[in-house]
Image 1 (tube, rainbow, N blue to C red):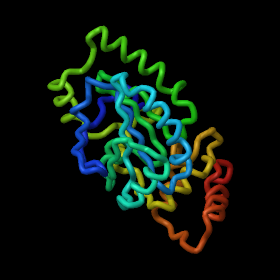
Image 2 (spheres, helix red, strand yellow; image 1 turned 135 degrees about the vertical axis):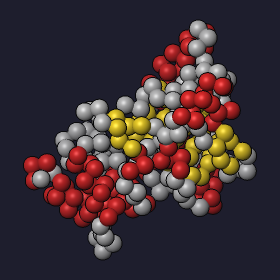
Image 3 (cartoon, rainbow, N blue to C red; image 1 turned 30 degrees about the vertical axis):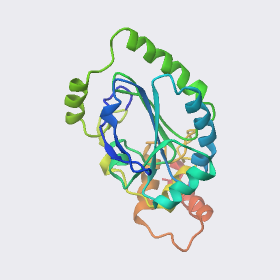
Length: 244
């Protein structure tokens, strides 16, 4: 439901001290935003593939921005060094994630030259060519047809839409800001745990009733004396649809 919506504008300082503002690149480049955390194994696992793709497309009006979730800069710098990454990287304390409805890692968002969300995925990307090549080609056609968004038009639309609006299957608006705020451990569990509704998604990516109940429980309940696997087993027993 987020595809086709105008990309919310944001700005910040990169880990190298440079100022970054999304609107500076909107309409000029295809922009990929990757939300990650250093403790997230799927995030680390996909980084070499993303690095390969970014390096192969440096001359294709393609920009990649990595956004870390609320961690200390030294941890982020250590990961970038360990994996030999030179992405434009920001550390977000929460506002950008709320704008983009992020509730699991990694989350990857592609913004076209029309200023709109063309791809939104929660989970590891293992073949960037399959994901991004068709989108780069379609954006080349948009550019050739003169359909890149103009700065004034983007500024006006972005001012009116400061965050993505999620729409349920019933047509009801879901405010991403009302999504339960999960700490590091709870987020790790949602990324690891299969949703109990029977789909092929993890809890972090699913928007069903069961996933919402699980996230609510992780946000509000105290599981400090339990190991992750024991928490997942308990949540599976409590929120399997057949048991509810």
